Image 1 (tube, one colour):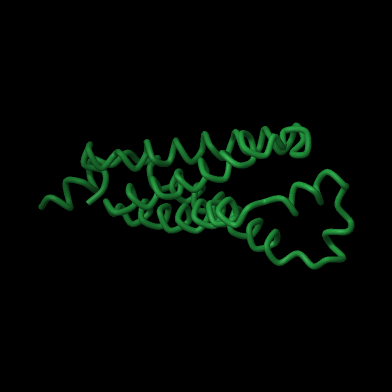
Image 2: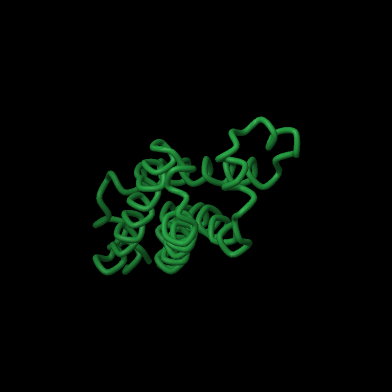
Length: 145
């Protein structure tokens, strides 16, 4: 009965938003894999600033990116399935985004190397990740079971 109530009170827009969020996170997974599997000849094609930025990234920042995208995708699957565990998985994803951004924007002073588009994209990633945690908090409203 409780599961039926949760499904019946969940807004109609919830599942489509979760599906779009999954696609967003899968694009992040693809970008992560593209980044960590770059060949030296691909890196050589980057600007000097981009090469320096890539070379200076600490492993914990790269790990933060991995947590952000993979946990984000898993959390979105949890949202689609309306599972409460999605909340904690998406919180871990947000922590990965924060860890990645901590290095990128605070510790590395890489704002000039990231470029305006990179800065805007990271801002959007942080907003979307925060929004997904907020959406997952719908479990308090009975949206997740």
